[in-house]
Length: 303
Image 1 (cartoon, rainbow, N blue to C red):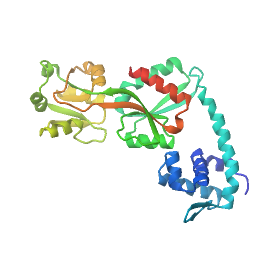
Image 2: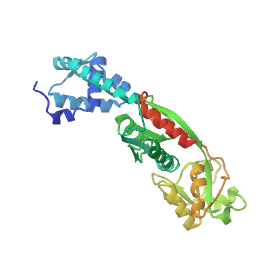
Image 3: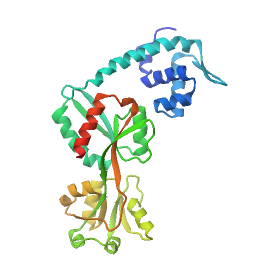
Image 4: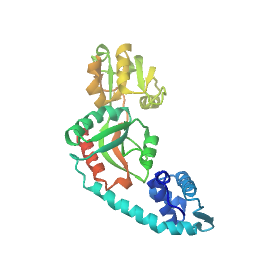
């Protein structure tokens, strides 16, 4: 086999090599998928790319699993040594100095986490790690988990009820809700009948016209009048102010931003389930010192 060109080497990302070594070791794609936090489909696609790159089937399907070809067995030793050398080199990241660090932190976060945590995090980066840049990816739960698995995102902030085994988390805070609306409407407190009689602006990233509040109302056999659905909280505050409507939103956002839009706040007149906000990362990054430092900064920002 001739030597690979730089262009060919560029196509061999680290995930492909880890999949290759996993298949040599386990001989079963489903085991490799679980070990690397990938889907079986992703492992199949990686194997397809490996076969194309090396010009060899690499693994033959047998009743007991995948049998490595002669070329795969010949590659296993050198590829394993290369990955271990890279793993050793990356161990330098365990000695993280924010003052001299450089690079990009890619953080998956939707609207609420962007408003509550990201400004404080940016300030901390400027003060303690000026060489680091922050890129925020506006990804929902499923896309955020996929980005963590693929390495597109270093970490994610939000709430996920069913966390996959490959993902670890650190709690940041628990959030509940307030209602923001015209001061005259909320002056004497807010009862359920007043709440239901008023027009409502709903925050719905997906564009739906019902949410957690409507679920709580449905359990009581009641409905509210939603006049508009917006994908983000700050535009919803602007819209509520312009329309004389109510908007039910996370407490931290309401307390920080409702008054600047001419709105008062009140406790909601019904019980709405609070939700935990956490930092999520792939378990392959458990020992990464930069990830540990980032977690510490977010815990302090949340406080």
